[in-house]
Length: 255
Image 1 (cartoon, one colour):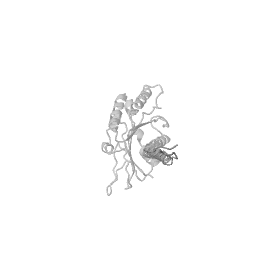
Image 2 (cartoon, one colour):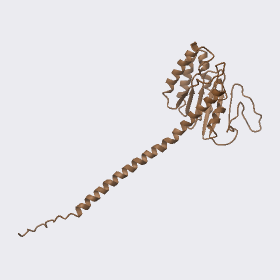
Image 3 (spheres, one colour):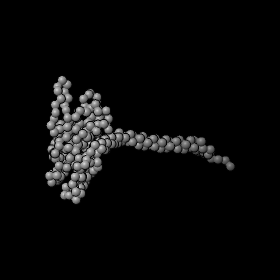
């Protein structure tokens, strides 16, 4: 199931794998052709998510993850440009960030980065993770208040774009309350996988529905035409078989 992934290494035949500091990169190691590509870019909250997402999606998906710990959305959305440019409507791009922008009192900057990024990504499907609640801080803290404002604005912005989905990150955190625990990562990966699958199920069903509707309309049209031709034939037959005695022109009847 996970033969298409490799964590924190780049495998080249005949070359020793090397570590990439600050980046978790996962690539397929075989030559199986995948139907869809899934690219995850995010901060530390996205760590280990690509592997779990791949597990739930299966072998028809190629999953790649780039993780930039302690980075804001400006850096996250400017990563993996080459891969993102080549993505199509058969692929999914996942963005996980915003927490570090809020921590630095730069939530407006983060929203602008997301907005600009999404506007230029109509070539593919985009899933945006909202900012997580800070369970290591008081509910009434200024950071958690800003998280609520950020998430509300993010949802309002993404409604304008029909190729985007927003997923909530509000459950299952570690005791220190900043990052998700193992159950939380599994829950998040499953939710992303379900959202991804629904995107392509909808795309596959759409042309079938249109074809059925078109065929139904054609059948109704043919039925209507057939009924009209049948009625016309009956009228012509009634005219031909009339029993009325017609008068011969130029002759007068004798009484």
